[in-house]
Image (spheres, helix red, strand yellow):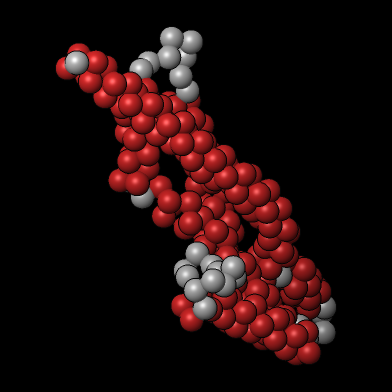
Length: 236
């Protein structure tokens, strides 16, 4: 009877661990596959955004360096005055002032370079997360000689607790935050870029930045007051 009772307990424990291992495998694969899918979307968006931002930086970077055309005109003017015999030596000198970029140019380029750095950092971390997810899936795969259910359960628990211990959930949630910050910096730089060009366009860009910022703040604080709200941000 005692042997029969032990066999029954062992059979029940085996069934329990089998169910646990199956549920853990399903949960872990769904979690990691969801992360990989999110990273694919972030990589595509970050790549397109970085390429577009680089085109803006190529144009805005020119405002940080002296205008070579203006320098050439000044040199040609000086040479023509030196060749004119009717001008004396005192009137030949051409005053030159050191080049100082405008405040709007400095602000615009600073914001856009920061935005590009955050976007590229987002792409780098997303690539690493995809690699970590692949390693996790590889670690949970069971070969042809499947171990006992309790060994499988220990493998899934060990790997999942590693994810929790090292805060991989936080890392995954932090990546979209980098991209959001990059977008806000881009819009802020857009306002500074249009400031010396056209006031009306600058105002429109400022309104767009304000709307995006207010909407983002609203979506961040909304879950604090409405618990079942599906709208949230990584800061919520």
